[in-house]
Image (cartoon, rainbow, N blue to C red; front, side, top):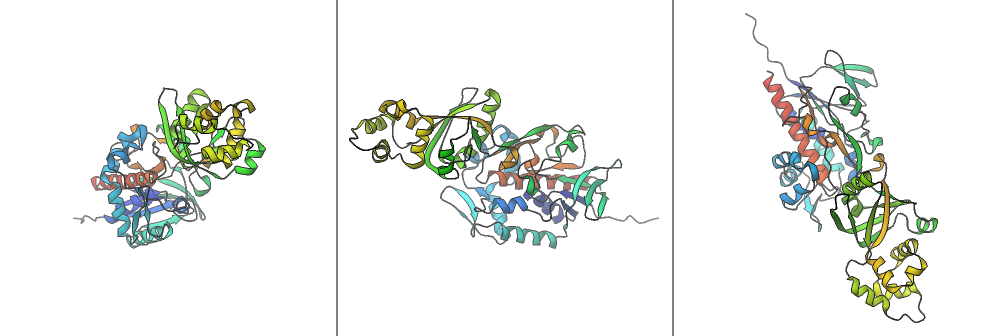
Amino acid sequence: MTPHVQTMKTAAVIGGGPAGLMAAEVLSQYGVQVDLFDAMPSVGRKFLLAGIGGMNITHSEPFDVFLSRYGARTADIKPLLKAFPPAVLREWVHGLGVETFVGSSGRVFPRDMKAAPLLRAWLHRLREAGVRFHVRHRWLDWREDGALRFVSPQGELAVRVDAVVLALGGGSWAKLGSNGAWVPLLAQRGIEVAPLLPSNCGFDVAGGWSAHLKSRFAGQPLKTVALRFTDAAGLIHERRGELMLSDGGIEGSLVYALSAPLRDAIAAENTVTVQLDLAPDKTLDRVIAEIAHPRGVRSLSSHLQSRAGIKGMKMALLREILSSAQLNDPVALAHAIKSLPIILSAPRPLDEAISSAGGVRFEALDEHLMLRDLPGVFCAGEMLDWEAPTGGYLLTACFASGRAAGQGALEFVRAAS
């Protein structure tokens, strides 16, 4: 009688961002041989670039508030985050030897504000667990016999494994590997994929800015303002913060936080008019009273700076948008300071966006993030159909979905034993 030989189960993870690395960690911890493939020369490239301004890992706000940041896909993201919530993610980071702290905004950062030490420690742990890394390996498709096809520096190769985790990213920052090239590969196999759209992005102003405004203020922050608009359904969106003038529009954290409803409003009505409050700490009545105060021989700019705190870019915006008659009418000017209309005509291109919306619809997946029509193939990260603002929400969901997909793949290979 031939003795039964127990062979090691195998899995391929395609994509070396946070979601793919987390899936690889889960699988390798339980004895699965993991081969991780990435088309770029090294893994974690978008992760590292996102950390240049300070690695915002997650957020410390209450879980219910945190969960609400995921908009229309909250119900789909909820089980993933409940299984791997922000507090647990933070402890996981500590387990890599990286201390964290909570900033004044509630955001959570590594103590040294850098992504590279975290990634180095993580990759070391994965290699110690037996994960094999294959860079410059671009996934092409499946062969008829089910093997994965890759093109590598050595030419095309076929890889057969027991389970696959796709963590291929969204469609933003193509130069770092997130180019959405996987969309037609899944669509041709009947997988329902929502179109990839820009998220956490800037917007163009109808007609653009004047050469004068661009030359003086493009790239500079506009602080202490509030932005307000009404969408096609009549819902009012309002937020306070800081934005920045770009060459042809507006961007920055305040705009990114509202990018999803702004994008959807433009899609519904071609343009959207936002109201910019240049003096959010003052009531309209107070601004009217301050501006109506006699200014004597002072210029309008000097008068507004001393009476209403309007100067620099704020003054330039008023001159850009208002007529001479409006500028010289104290009541009309006060209303404009509290509600300056700016018409936005389009989001910036997908490749410029921080992240993307759209992707593999959750309806095409089971509760373990396995594609219903492709047994043994799991999806994770930004290639799923969800979006969230910056502030740690993007990374947290990528980590959580990678963990869920890894656990789903682990259960799949175990069940096949």
